[in-house]
Length: 277
Image (cartoon, rainbow, N blue to C red; front, side):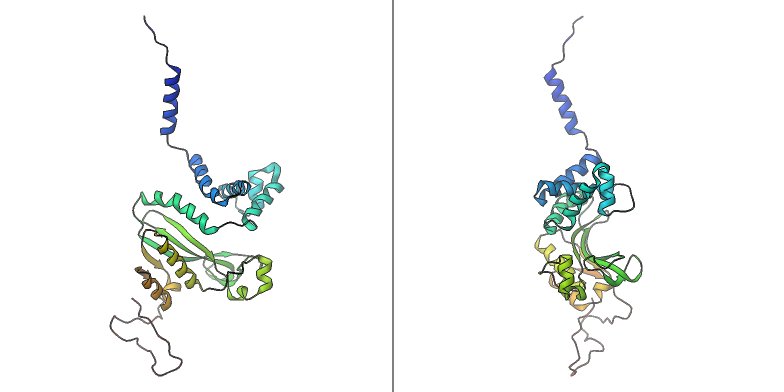
């Protein structure tokens, strides 16, 4: 009986080829994703802390503030881990637009495998807060609670199809009282370049930058907080975007070709009203 000895080099090549063709586990894909987005942070230690922070957000546990997350990630070095993670979140300088761009480059192709982008969703999200020191915190409408309360608010733009959505722009709303308080701004570290802007103005800026970045187009969707403002609707139209926006029941509308009902002529208090389309 004749036997042959397997060629070790061929066996090794077969194993490597099999490994490369094997689908990556969720853990491996998450690690690769973090590598890509952490790369834009520049500093190696900063990138390591960012990876730890993102990992902590996904670990079990109700509290997602830095200290309890540090305790879950490195129980034996809680203080040191807390300091490094807190530094990257609260003190280190990095470009949030570059980070969101890196996220978009990773996530958008995966979304488009399930269909083209169909919608650009404008929205604002509130985060209830107990204290008064977090940037932008104020007594304002909080969607999570369904009433006026102490909270922060962020304006976002997301692209979506029928399967998934992805935030591509995100900015904290700075109330006018905050914007005009130098001492409060300095204590919280608000950059001088950041001034007061309405939520609709922030959203229009996000839409404009998305157009400049050649993001796949979609119909702009938003609730009545955006749809009721004629300047916002006009701004969206100027960007050559179609929109479907909510309107409150008290908002006046009229068909194309007709003058604005109720518009007062000859009055210094009169203001131009754009047609709701």
